[in-house]
Image 1: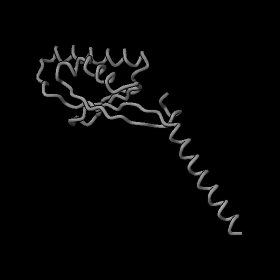
Image 2 (image 1 turned 90 degrees about the vertical axis):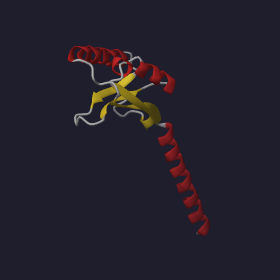
Image 3 (image 1 turned 45 degrees about the vertical axis):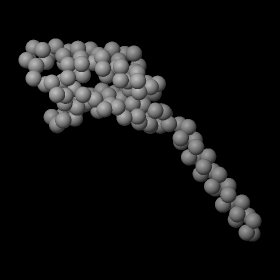
Image 4 (image 1 turned 30 degrees about the vertical axis):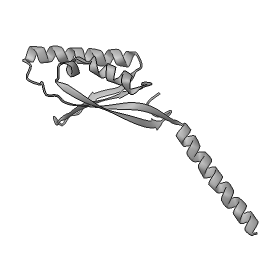
Length: 125
């Protein structure tokens, strides 16, 4: 009886390990970018509007390429201004995407990159 109990116990541990491994295998890395207020936010309204237009064009271009899965502003007017979630192979590529954004180039925004994971098959590819 003890042998059967031990076998069932060992099998249950193996099953849990296998399930945990399957979950881990089902994870996909992404890059979460937090956009924050930058040091240079004193542009006149026409310049700020031009920067914002170029910022949105960049977002649309990256989304169309399949590299940017989510982008959007925070609505509370705090220091955190928005987020990007990139589907990319490297942090270096994400840095290039960010540094080519007009709002970041102008200093209106700065960014932080955070590697992040979620299960495949969620709302992301």
